[in-house]
Amino acid sequence: MAGKKDISIIIFPGSNCDRDLMVAINKCMGVMPKLVWHKTYHIKKTDMIFLPGGFSFGDYLRAGTIATKSPATKEIIRLSKKGVPIIGICNGFQILTECKLLDGALIKNFGQLFKCKETFLKVVNNKNKFLKNLNLNSILNFPIAHSQGNFHIDESGLKKLEDNNQIVFKYSSKLGKVDEFNNPNGSVKNIAGIINKEKNVLGLMPHPERAVEKNTSKDGIDFFKSIREII
Image (cartoon, rainbow, N blue to C red):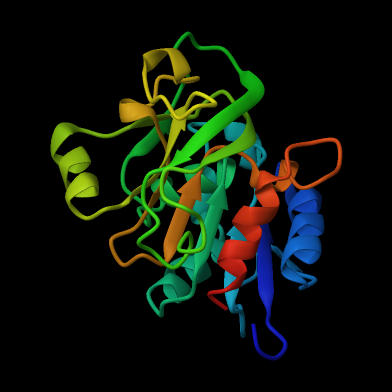
């Protein structure tokens, strides 16, 4: 990572993981990110954008929907078309699907309950710039905290994701078994994270920023160090 880099975190009313994300980025990537309010009409310069977890606009209508109307989201769309790396975590993932930068939708968890627990993710695709420094089939331990994390997509959309190698994380057991028992929210095919066809937008429901401290899993450090290499 040569020279000074600019990393932005977009904050919406109801975002609540922005500070955790800021601390994790600074610790693992060596950059103090800029906090950008959702009413910002122009992001002059940034090398990477994060959309944090939380409950943007109280999750009214559907999680992430109202956030798509914010001026900063229009900037995210504009910059994504220029190849700027965009990463959405939890509510950030929901926003990215709602503004169509990522395929599918995040709907209510199977069973309708809010889930807050430790999960394991299997890296099922590292042929992209975000995860190229993570070993294929390696297992990461990140927590989840969501009520609308059930990734849904129709059969034709799923086939496109598979054909284009856009699925990057799947919920699994600690030993890497991907099955219904190790699916915390009902996501189709245990999908926990995807990228766009152009490979510069990443969304995942689990929280890597909550897995970087001494009393947590340290696997988030590997995640952030991997994406650090692309800027």
